[in-house]
Image 1 (spheres, rainbow, N blue to C red):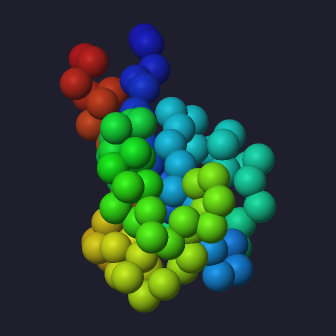
Image 2: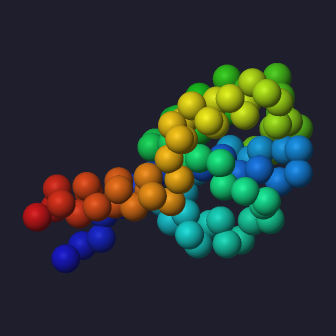
Length: 101
């Protein structure tokens, strides 16, 4: 059975910065990045990532890293909606697998 591909935008905190990036393999990608905490996953690919980069461009420190202001932290809390990011991602995978059957 083919494995579904889920594109996600991730929010990682490292010290007082947040990285907003995208991947189809979050376990592998996050294992390659220094971070203190995974704050949230948001469903979507490059278009959603680019929208978030534009939305928070006034906080950009360089590349995909942004200052962890109350505004950006509140956004990550809203995206996470009180759920563990990994549980959310696993739910999306489960739904995608179910759709294949």
